[in-house]
Amino acid sequence: MVDIQEIRTFIEEQKLRCRAYAVCDEYDRDPSLLNIGNRIWDGIILEEDIGIELGSKKNPIAKAILHVEDTSAVHDNRITLIGQKISFLRRADHSFGFLILFSGKSLSDSDFRKIQRNMFLSNSIEGIFEKRYGRGSWYQISRSLLKKGINFSHIGFALMKLLKEKFPHEIDAIEIIFAVDDEKTLDYIQQLQDMTIATVIKQFQNKIKEIQKRRPDCDLTNECNVCDNQEICDQIRDMIVKRNKMRRPTNEKQN
Image 1 (cartoon, rainbow, N blue to C red):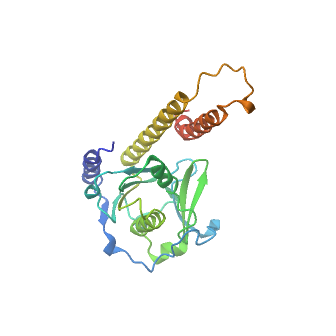
Image 2: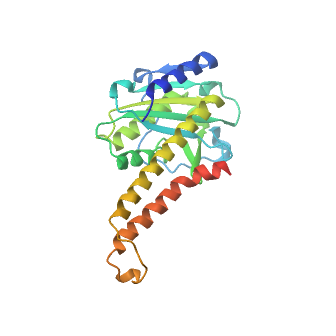
Image 3: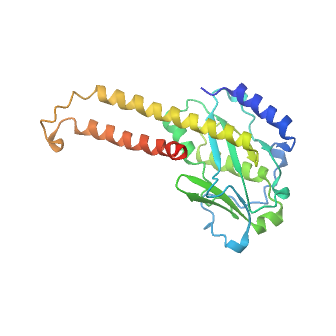
């Protein structure tokens, strides 16, 4: 269960501590700045055309997406930035992350996992390439977009637009909190993500137990390919593989 009040309190505390923050709503958006669409471009940015990088191979983007049951608790179309605006960033790469809060009616565990898997931009904003390394990623933003005046509000509203278009019946409201070069906020976002992964793994474990109850104890006297319980065993194996894939990033981080 998401403790939305705890998250709100943390965000307000970071605003007071950081001082460099901004909050904007949809009316601040310039819709003509970005070319947005599903796989709208090939994502190729030459090294000399990279204007700035958010995150890096060694320091991937911290991402967390949380489902809030109470729609009124999510400020739809609101972007909060903790850290400097893009126009003030000067180095080649920066620590970066974001938290997405969304509400949706009758959201199943399967729906939630699908939404989680679509947090990648996947070549959907011309001039921004989300480069992946394993399960981590970071953004490369072109010089031309920087010259146009792109800011985090544009990236945030693009993410909202893409998610709402892909999940029109599952998502009612979305709010995004960005963090740049603010380690305390980024650590908090990572903790929320780790918590989410642990919750999903537990859900998988419960499903495995439910399926195992339908299978009599296997005494290994029959060949698997002629066993009446083969389909149930296959389900268990598939779910264990999926669970291990989800668990791997946390283990790698600990190592």
